[in-house]
Length: 194
Figure 1 (cartoon, rainbow, N blue to C red):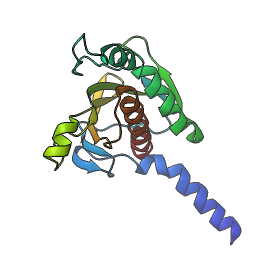
Figure 2: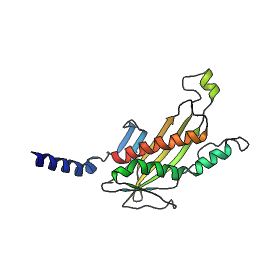
Figure 3: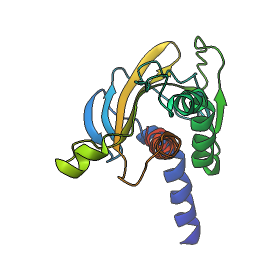
Figure 4: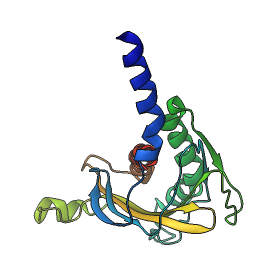
């Protein structure tokens, strides 16, 4: 009986990678972590234990005015996003045997790895006055990213990830740190669920 149970467990775990593939299509609120997921083409990430993170694009983030006290902090925060996401993603995936590598060149497409490209689109402290006077979500702080998973040269999966931050976050560094932690945890769930 114990041998049969052990054999079934081994077979189940060895087949998990094959069963995890998500079918081509669009999914809203995928596994309650990713707002919008679109699988554009069939893919096979089975057995791939390396994640290559391409440099995070941040040009879409609206910067404060240069004379604003937060300008330098926001620029510094955005400059460190790629390494911070890689570090957090590695923490979330290392127990499952994954290795996260930051690629310096955006043209890297390794067919033996899961290649991930992120576009950080939003880092907004919101408006405290709107939150106080209007309410109902007006003026909320938030962060957002769009991303693409590549299988070789083919963009096979795209996704959008948006979150509203708690009202007690009052600086960009804390907002970005929270965004990186949440995004990395959700990306890890996504990679393990693909």
